[in-house]
Length: 170
Image 1: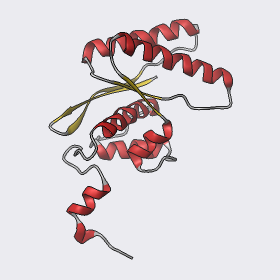
Image 2 (image 1 turned 120 degrees about the vertical axis):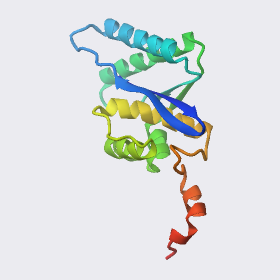
Image 3 (image 1 turned 135 degrees about the vertical axis):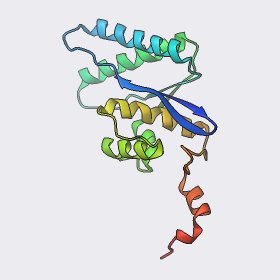
Image 4 (image 1 turned 90 degrees about the horizontal axis):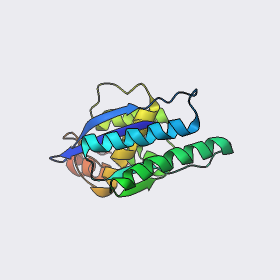
């Protein structure tokens, strides 16, 4: 399970924490769900967030995998609700669209764009971590459109407005 926590200060996005919770396949499903719940509780206690965003369930072919994923998401949402946080879900397509401009982008493209947007020195090792960070940044973009990121422009419209001499019309 990946997670990402961001903070906004002076219109700049800062990463507070981004990582993955590795869950052993040797533990039973209920123990893994308990570990997810505890991790979310610990993160909420440590960072005192104001909101909680999560990727909405997607449809797959393997019913058992879907069931396990849905349970894990439900436990994470329950921990957030128990802490009094408003919860927002975003579809994978919406997250990719928000970060890359392409709802069909792959994980590498999302990671590269996050690296650019947030001025990361390198892309994190695990895609689950960048996926979670993408959810957080997507949520921020929905809430605060047009904000600058690390001093950079957020949208193409802002870029064109400030760099009209660089635009080539064909």
